[in-house]
Structure formats: structure tokens, C-alpha cells
View 1: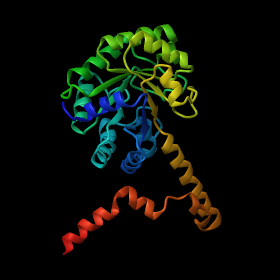
View 2: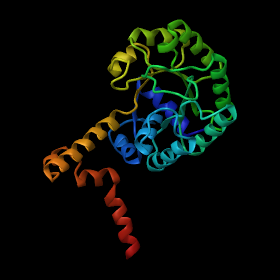
View 3: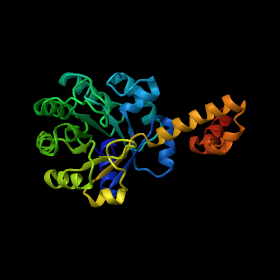
View 4: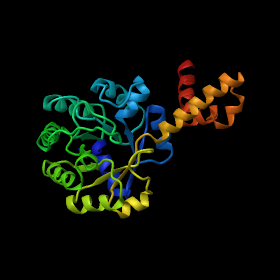
Length: 289
């Protein structure tokens, strides 16, 4: 579909190598990411659970919970949005419903994983995977209902940390044969692992540069040289925002004022710039005339 979110995502993937995809926890973060020059953005399932609902990343949010944040973001910006749909929120029928809803909401791409429904953060111990066949069924269910052929379905595998290299390669090849547009290799620990999967699959590879996890933080240049096509920074800004907020709370509580925190705050003028406040204000003035 010409100029659809999916086609714009694929175009960005073609133009920027590797494509940097930054996590945006809400609509305002998406506006700032666009102003910073990013060509694609991301909504994390963990981010929705943590920041919108105060819950851990254990599959405790629903499709509608995620769609609520999706709609806010896609209504605010036109840059392509990749969305984490965890395990698809149910059986194949529910996965199909989820894909249709994401496309209607203006999403460009999703990734769906091979963990069991009661999932865990990809960098925690105790992950449990479904069979290769069940994950293939998930992928097929997603692909079968695409109304936009450019919409990307990315298969995420957590098998590297739980089953080892050979098993994760076998799984990934099956996911490619099922029609997955790209592979999200979770919890890789070396650049060589990305090279191996790229050479074996030949489809785009996504590397997750999440902080404080199993995966070392490589530069985009290093990852590109290892065959990575997409570099994801799922919660980098969110982690910084959370720390800044807690520091301000402590400052106000301990000192009775926020004055010491002012140098670390975004100014009112900077806020207005990202929001295009002047343009809205001019339109409001015209309505009053």
C-alpha cells in the first residue's frame, strides 16, 4: 500500500543502515524523537506495563491497553511506529484480531515472540518458550490477515538464552520460512551471533540495545558491520525520564523547593517548541476573531 505506515517503515529501513529505532513511551516523547531526527519509533510492551499501569513486564496488559497508547502516538506523529505485541494476547484468532487492530491504528510493524503466554522480560531468568510449531502458527496467523502487505511482522526469538545457538537458529529458520519479515534476536551476547543469524537467514535482523541486560551495548556502526539492520533502544529515554522524575521528587521533599533541579528540567519554551504551541495559539486566535 503506497505511503502506508508499513511502506514508510520499509523505506526508512532501506535508507538508514542500520535503522535506529528509539522507544517513545508516550505521544510527547514521540514528538521529541521526531524532532531529534529519528526515522522510526517504538512502543515497548514493558514500557506500557511499567509506565501506564505500574506493572512488571509479565504479560499483565491487554491488547486494548497497548492500543490506547498506540493511538495517542500515531495521532501525534507520522513517523513509522513499531509495536511490541508480546505473544499476541492469545490463540491464533486473537493474534489475527490484534494485527487487524494494529493496522487500523496506524502501526507500521509489530514483533511477536516465542515465549509462553505468561511471558517474562527477555533479559530475566526463567523464560519458557512455546514449541517451534506453535510460534510458526502465530506468525502465520499474523500474516494471513494483513490488509497492508507492507506492514511488517517481525519474529522475536528468546531461544538463544534458553535453548542455545543451534536451537535458536533452527527456530529462526522456521520463522523465516513461515514468512516473517525480519528476526528480533533477543539477548544476544556477542556481535558474532548477529553475523551468524544474518548469514543463515538473509532477512533483516533487529538488535535490542536495552540497558542493564544480558546484551552488551554496541554502537550502531559496530552492529551494522555485524549485519544488523535495525537497532532498538526500547526504554532508554524512559529510564532517564524515570530517574529524573525521582530525583526531582527527592529534591522537593528534602529541600522544600525544586530550585536545585531547575538546570535539569526542560524549559517551558522548549516544551512549547516541540508541541508547536505557537501554531495552535494562532489558530485559536483566528477562531476568536
